[in-house]
Amino acid sequence: MGVAGLARRLEPYCTRIAAADLSGYKAIVDGPSLAYHAQKLAITDNLKNRQAHVPSYADINRQALRWLRALEDINIKVVAILFDGALPAAKIDERLARLNHSNSRVRLFRTQYPSASCPIPSSLGTVSYPLLAPALREALSDSEFASATRLVPGEADDWCMPYTYDATHSVIFSSDSDLLLYEYDAECRIMLFDNVQLWPEPKFKGYSPVKIRQSLGLSSLLPLAYCLTLDKHMTFNALVESANGVNVESSDYLDFSWRYEGPEEWEADPRSQLSVVPQHLDNRLSEFISQITGEITTPVVYLPLLVEDPHAASAWSMGHDIRLLAYSLFTEMDAPPRSFLRPHKKKHRHTVEEYRRKAEAVSVHQVKLYNPSEMPIAAAEMANNISNWIQWMTARQAPQDLVWPLVAANLILLELPKAPTISSFIRVLTGRFDNSWDFVHLTARLHAALYSLRMLKQCVDMWIYQYQNSSAEPRQHMDTLNRHLVDMPTISDLFLIPGQARKTHVDEKLLKELLEDIYASAKIEVPSENISNRKLKKKQNAEKKERRTIEMKAEAGRSFNVFDLLNRET
Image (cartoon, rainbow, N blue to C red; front, side, top):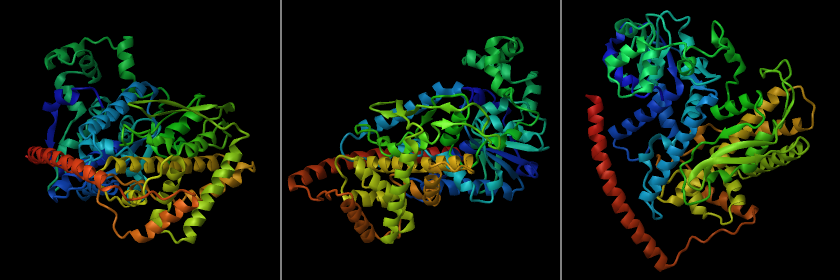
């Protein structure tokens, strides 16, 4: 998030830069910031095209790719797009605060619409997209920017600076004003995404950290930022004066400045450490792997904050057994010399801590792992179950894009005490939002099951890489799991957002037949779709009243959005 108020205080030093003056520059892009910016672009695009639905992950990825290609069209070469591989322990409190803030927004949204009806949750913004960054990283890995896309062993913004080392003319794009605080050469420029417009005509405003320091008579901007953290109300002139008097040897200042001067383990070029980071993992899995290969005996996993009904049980109860196996693959872990993993003594782990919603808050949940003798049995059972599911789908000629959503639907049926109706599943699987909280929560459950399978896929990949020469019993089961999971579609293909454009070209008759077969195979009675006339009338009246409220709020929101858009474009 950066130092609060820093960008505003330095706004007078943010100057217009002609596109021609940036020709030949090398672009270093903060990947998560690009993902969030692309989401804004996708919303703006929908507004201009008068589309009522919210953007999908695929829509957002397209905007990000469009943005990167527009840079290259004006001869700004994209040399690095960096994504978080792990967040430092020092940011645990900040991370939990963000999770609880997002959770509070979902709870507030629920209180605004307390009946069964629910509008398109567009007001939740990026909260509706918990997989925004990994979805973009995945899309980039299948594009012309694949070679420039990197997962780094830390936060993406901290690693932008090293990529300026061998670029005589570099420009960093981010939403984090903290990037102004690093040491750069005189030609380097820092640009915040909100200060960049690439179409219809490119317009840039950016910062030169070297010129700012020279103008203020400071050898570094770090003391200025440090003083701002001490007193955010201080005038700018007072900040500059205080910065000149900072004791840079004090423990408080050193605690603040260490991250901007680079971790101690950084070498002359810290990019040499990138080889230790597996590049195909989501950030949460990368962080998990970094913990189990270090000194941590109880790894912590921060599950994505799903948009769900806060009045219902956590959607993350779905897929628990799958995540349990994924974590347990590393119950007993050692690192042979050939591995990218750092060598250390064998460790025995008994639990993993999951942070997820429980009741009204995000809290820790202890997951007791399989012991080393139980893990092969659990792996064999999971491999057998997934093999049976895939064979079952193949025999019924299930469309490829529905195989894994149907597997997830099967998981949900086995977990819930009361099965959803088949029509509910059809609406969720096709993205046909019916403005109900039941739809929202069933979608969240489906996402939890699908992401648990994705976590298992990536953990199996890591296990096979780590033990590729192993003849131990789990190996055959890992190979079976890998063979089936390797074909899982991408996030943008699997994870539908409530309110996005519905999937087209889905044979709903076939989908209904497949779901009926799944219910029958699971020996679950298909719930009746019929309700009494009295209940139906009551439900319709409640929905009619809710729709009027939604329309009034939406109308007010549209008026605001239009003027807000005009203000941004002037």
